[in-house]
Image (cartoon, rainbow, N blue to C red; front, side, top):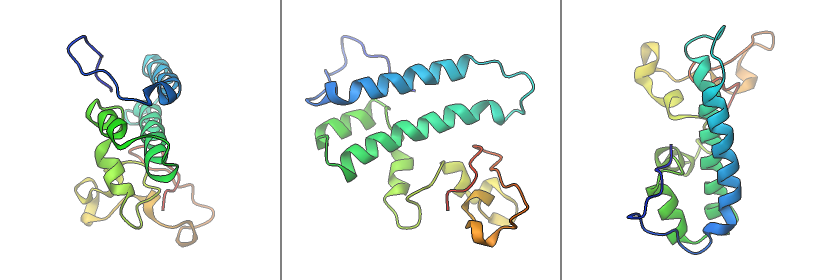
Amino acid sequence: MPKIRTSKSKPPPEGWDDVEPVLDDIQRRMRETENESHEGKRKNESLWGVMRLDHQRSRYIFDQYYRKKAISKELYEWLVKEKWANAALIAKWKKPGYDNLCCLSCVQPSNFAHGGVCICRVPRRDVDKEKFVECMHCGCRGCA
């Protein structure tokens, strides 16, 4: 969750006006998702929407800086510092083979038996076609 901007925080760098509407929209949807009813859902399922929106917000910032070169380094670093982007997830996206990673919990061996990784990291061609695959941590259906 991004920090609340106070009068003591440094003002946003040049280019903030270009990305602010998109980030505010994602933030609004995040609040709506957090306020949804969790009745009838498993414990992990209630967090899936929040994790998807966090991924979407971080991916937007990542694409704007690394792929489109639409924002400056100063603005990118400010967004990471102010927690608008998930820095650890972006660091994984820079590594080969992790460019579509959905969340960090899917690649932590301590979360799985025998030190493996999540089922969503297994390529679709290696999983039974009839078997419905869904990550128990984030609800991803395949990010390999």
